[in-house]
Amino acid sequence: MHWQISDSCNYRCSCCCEGRAVVKKTALPHVTEETAHNMMQFLSRLEPGWTVRLSAGEPSLHPRAAELASSIVAAGIASAWRQTSLPRCRSSYCDRGLAGAIG
Image 1 (cartoon, rainbow, N blue to C red):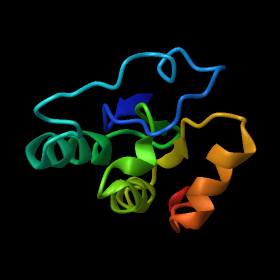
Image 2: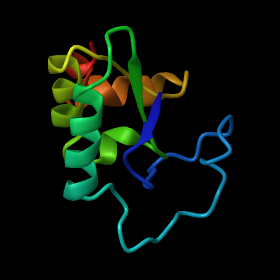
Image 3: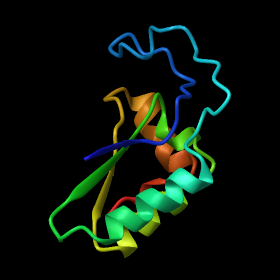
Image 4: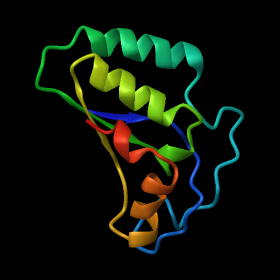
């Protein structure tokens, strides 16, 4: 299951259709607290075996990305990040301390 937690992306990766798009200037660049709460309630009722892939333009730009991923894992659901194969993008997860939140 994909959960798009943000509309933001700070990369312009040539391999990504979102990276080539114009930066989105939305009133709500990230999911709201209410949406995050409702989604976590939904996920807590899922049977084991699901994987939630946090996605976006760049999911690590969400201010609570690591907390959301950790909460997903704590609910017994596997968590993953949608990321590019470019080394600079992969390393950003480690730089931001987000790699440990993936279960």
